[in-house]
Image (tube, rainbow over all chains, first blue to last red; front, side, top):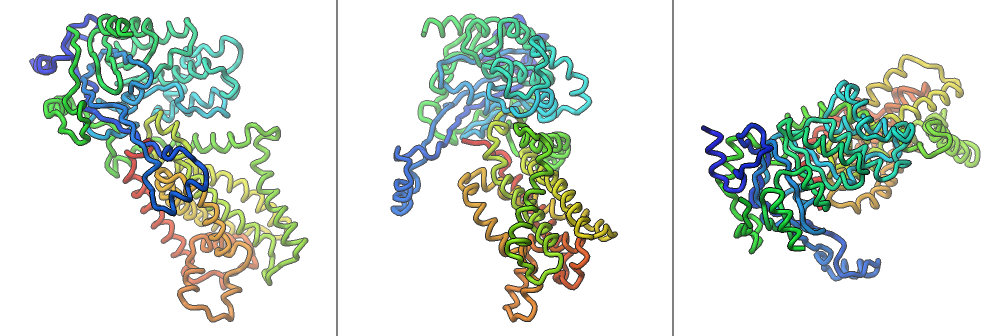
Length: 273
Length: 309
């Protein structure tokens, strides 16, 4: 059978995990020897004064300001439909960068990422317009994700209920700048989770919510996964990784250290710490 | 079984451009996976942009309302700002200096020029920062990036429409009664909007790569304003002078001057056909088409690179 061929050839993805959808792994994200290099301008020479800049221009030394940061170094993996994959590693290990590259938001230096459909990334600082009411942000966020006005109207109540920001009073009609960081993060997650994604990536967004909200979002993540989607989750909370993920990628200094079932990788990671 | 992976060989000696794994590529192809973040074809890109038209209009409206949301008078400022602008110009040029520059209906003439040029100026300025000032949005969500400059220009158009309301009130108070020629405002504004958007898209791409442009543009735009006959009549200056033909063509063909003159022609009775430079509608249409097409293609060419670094 076709699906068996595809399972057999990739040694990393065919570990039998019980929660997988219906047995046949259909790849949704393939990263092939992915390298990401950031170029940071304006760091060079240390001194940022106007005279220093002028001096640099006069002496024709243009390149001093550019520094390269090699954030992801040759990562390869294949993610399948119905998997929820946790990304762990210390701060600055390249987790968020990897997600951005999968979402197509950062171009790869070399190597390729193949995806099924358009992956959606949900980050903590996903921009919302702080001067607008929560209500308008729900509409705007939905439209930006490509939902139609009718779809948004249908799901509006669901989004607001899910975020739970109405529990403490009528906050949805207030500008988002009046929200606490937890409330804003909850609303953002609710908006993003309202759409059915083939691939949804969540970057530490759950860390800000309270316990009740975290429970709701974990349930929603499981739901998304059962709708034959793939979910990526970056978190420093090993418990929430254990609760939601079936597989874990461990990154360190931009390199993939370990890739396997949640329990074993998290245990190794904890032992390493 | 979990396995500790030895990172791929290329990772140890990070050679950008290391050969990709053909097997993974074949697997991706077999399941219909596409390269993430690749630039779509031009027709596909246009289709995607059209799909997000509701986002573009909603974002524009949001931008306009968000500008005044912290002010106590709120949205009233949308009308107050152009009104105060007009008042300042009236005070300086009408009362203090008494300059009429031999132009009849000088105040409507001046205010029309100022409003139309402000539309162009702000479209270019916000266009320059459309990508570089919204990196958060660009890095967080996936949508055709052209949404941003188009949206910002639409927001400027909305502002201009408020200004036009004020302008028409001023015209009425100066005894100009509405005539059929006022309808010419619609094609003139449409063409200018296309021109502005095209220019904004060019500036958005340049500004995304070189954010310094945002510092430089105000000076360039101010120079452009003084050369565009906002405060004086180009046709009067050209009268009875023997300037080189090239300078004359440059002054008359200047898109800003073209759109300003068209608006004056539409709204002000004493601004007659003779004051319009030759082939003015052809210039207006040509500039719009040129800027629109070039801007869109130029912007699309770098689609996959916005938001980097």
